[in-house]
Image 1 (cartoon, one colour):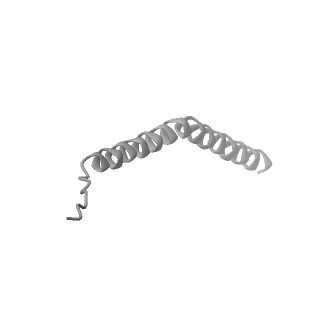
Image 2 (cartoon, rainbow, N blue to C red; image 1 turned 60 degrees about the vertical axis):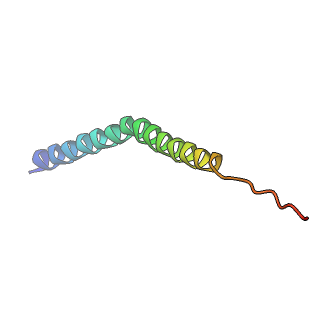
Length: 60
């Protein structure tokens, strides 16, 4: 009975370590994709400001 319980605890520990390792590996790619999307939005906003027309008020 004790051997099965310790094996079960060991299996859960290995599973937990595998999940944490997967999150740590994916963390870099998630942040890279978020930063790329934010840069894309920033470029779109800066390009939309380039098309603004400034009007000069002339007082006659």
